[in-house]
Length: 301
Ligand SMILES: Nc1nc2c(c(=O)[nH]1)N[C@@H](CN(C=O)c1ccc(C(=O)N[C@@H](CCC(=O)O)C(=O)O)cc1)CN2
Image 1 (cartoon, rainbow, N blue to C red):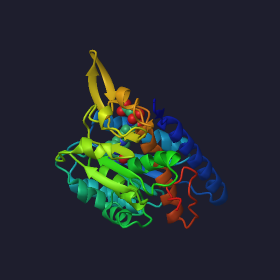
Image 2: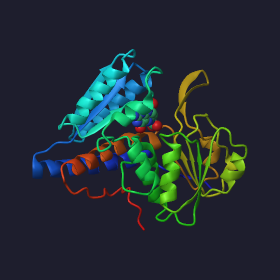
Image 3: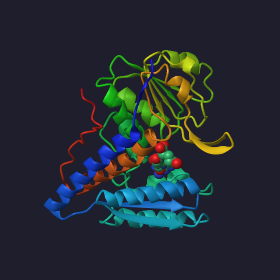
Image 4: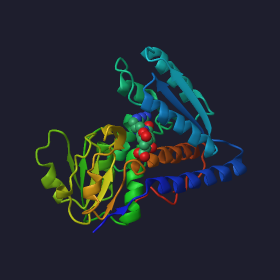
């Protein structure tokens, strides 16, 4: 058996096209334009790439993009000041602070300073709490993208077993909550878990966000399972730089039913979902109907 490759690039392109069409339609009806503010503190090279891509894709979708670049020694009060101004700015409907932040800044305090209705990353404690209790809320972009891709393969998660490897606030925990909200039986493992291969062998769905290159091996995978690889690891292979996930892709694809590649799997969906979240936030803030996108985050039940 060879797994179907889940092409995140084409799903992301379809989602971006949907967002673009919806924005053009709403602009024609109301004259209003969604605005996304992205804040980058410091000069982390990967963050620079992601922030540039977010601004470019926002503009291509018909949004206004506001980029705020601050030096790495920015004081907390100055960053919080900027966030308060963006909270009050009526042209800004979505705000995100690119992570990771420099170590001297308190990430939790910074995120919770963002107005929850503009928190298009879905990291604010009120969005986290609402997702955790199965209420409609802004859902973090990477897990949302994973759910959208999984829904293309599984119309109904009831009766399925999932393993989430990694329990970060950005991916692992929200991913587990979304699968649980969809009535999947969910296991969560992390670096202190001793029996991950045994848990994986029980799973119809494996989502891995551990930051360990090639962690998930073919022997762990139940034949036909769906494997979602959130890992982005920059390594050297054959003396050259390479980008790999947390899954031993070449071997796991021989056992799995469907699998996301790295690059070109979950990553592109992260930014497409950010645009979808910004469109939703814009609709809510302007009293406009927020129809589910075709690549819907809604549970079909
Ligand atoms: N405020 C946030 N910070 C971070 C988030 C986030 O969702 N919000 N997620 C990651 C970084 N990230 C977006 O910010 C992100 C990561 C990867 C990709 C992507 O398209 N990856 C490509 C490979 C690109 C490469 O060469 O690096 C792929 O997988 O194909 C997009 C966005 C941490 N910070």
